[in-house]
Image (cartoon, rainbow, N blue to C red; front, side, top):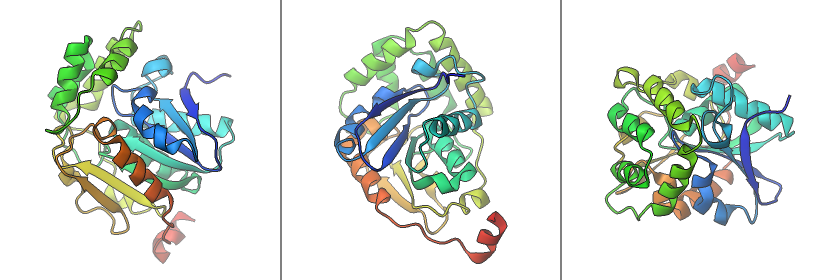
Length: 267
């Protein structure tokens, strides 16, 4: 059976970087991050289920469905080891992938990831889900960004085109409603995060209006945390060169062994 999950592939190299966008995005939002990465690595930027060219993926919406879908697609491509990067909802998906198949993930870079605390700006995300015109999308992107963010016209145009596909806007509204029910999001238990032995970098903007940066507090001690001053939630668009350099740096870190009792429990 041919998978209906779409991935944009660029570059060629011995290392594969998998990129997972946030809610309401698509693989194209990684364009300015991929540019400095692809000369020395292969990049696979996915359209998550329910988004873009993966709009019709069955049961799209939950992060668990997306995690299983990407892992299955990677297995079909015979990709054995990846450097995994996820933003927002894509960060929750990436974390679930790393928990499910830790041997496959050489490094994990999470940009304002979902699932790290219950707080979420439900009204803003629901407004973003329903935005269709470039001006509406631009207003939402501005609300989700830091005070010094550059104009996002090219991103707004990309997202506007994506939302013109039949059923796309309705699907985003459906996902947003489920994801922000009671203005709370599902949380990945901290004790599960402690099982991750690969290099983990968590990046958060100090002015994030969607997910508060305090959700990076009290993470496992071996996680590296990078706060980006005056940046908001849209880290890919706000600081693409910085994000690319952080990804490269995390790729070069070595995994740390788990504590004996955790290693025994995982075996």
